Image (cartoon, rainbow, N blue to C red; front, side, top):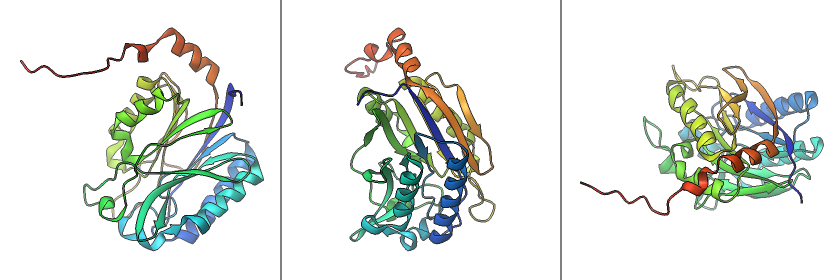
Length: 273
């Protein structure tokens, strides 16, 4: 299929009820129905662990098997109803005796075309994701409607190598779907922007909002960035959707003028003197 030159993106920022999977599924379904009834989109994005909230002790209780996950069934219905592709944030997927932080990707026909398991697990500052979740084995880039999208989840953003691998494989859009703490605003804003600029790609930076527990809360500040790091659309702490219509042809022309990837060396062996 020939690549589409202009595509419409919708990223939905929301807050989860910790450990209440059914309430979260209903909430996201309502948000998607509202957003997609107002504006159509070619691609829809959701944040990390929206079914459970960022609370590692709740992960196993909110886990779902892939073949009959209620959250995925709901997303498949929405995709088919609105004729849109959904990069579905992530849910806790139970695979036998193991658990993964998994992004489901669904096409316009409501078909689950692939999944991505988070490649880097966050186990700092009291979080214990790595003791519960099995690490993903490889990056996954999906081709939908002729548009190549490189998928990452939250802590993956701290590893530029995965984004460079996507770009070298022909990525048009990079996405990071997160549940990002409010005390880390500078890293969020700087790293998402950097990944867009250094790889010359459109970038969807999407995180949850709302309270976690005690005085902890999610950052919000989801953005859609262009290949120069310009913010095309953003939202601060509110719930809701952000939209952008992007022109892939403009990006291709820019890449032809500024051929950064051709200047990458095969090796960067450090000489210690």
